[in-house]
Image 1 (cartoon, one colour):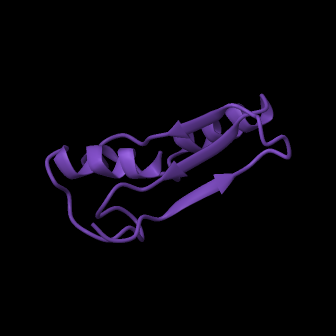
Image 2 (cartoon, rainbow, N blue to C red):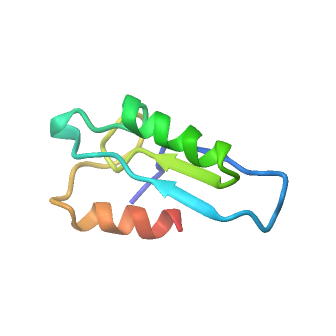
Length: 80
């Protein structure tokens, strides 16, 4: 629960497809600013997608603490 840090880049076309890019486990260096996540974000954007990437709870400026994957699943659902 709490706020999640994220970056949202909408396309001008309101009917554009949407991509949500999730990062790897933070214990393995996963954040929304990891180069793979960042590059995927802009690759989707350049292909015409509206794109969201965000940090799961307890990562970066997102509030909360790691929750063994349970809370993180809720984070992803909230992003939708």
